[in-house]
Every structure is written in C-alpha cells, then in structure tokens.
Length: 42
Image (cartoon, rainbow, N blue to C red; front, side, top):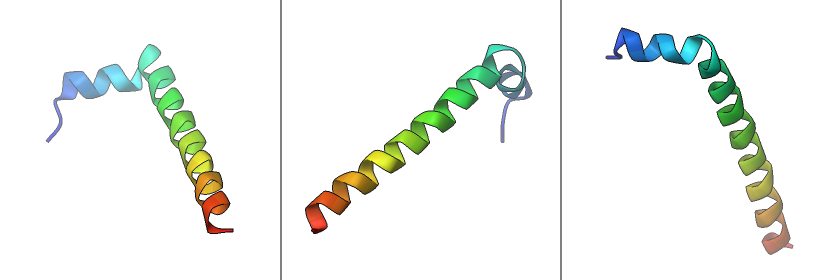
C-alpha cells in the first residue's frame, strides 16, 4: 500500500527529477559492476 500524498510528490515537480536521477544512477551502477566483474573473470 502506498500513501497517495507520497506518491503524488514523486510524480510532480522535482519528484520526476529525483526519479530520473535514480534511474540514471541505477544504469551507471549496472555498467560499473559489469565492467568490474568482466575484469576479474579474464
């Protein structure tokens, strides 16, 4: 269950920016970990 007021903060204004930043950081972390593991496996 999600509080409607909290969800509204994520979908308006700066909340969208925070969601976008979180997505970008997830992708950067994924790429970083893949490169790290690829270096160890070789």
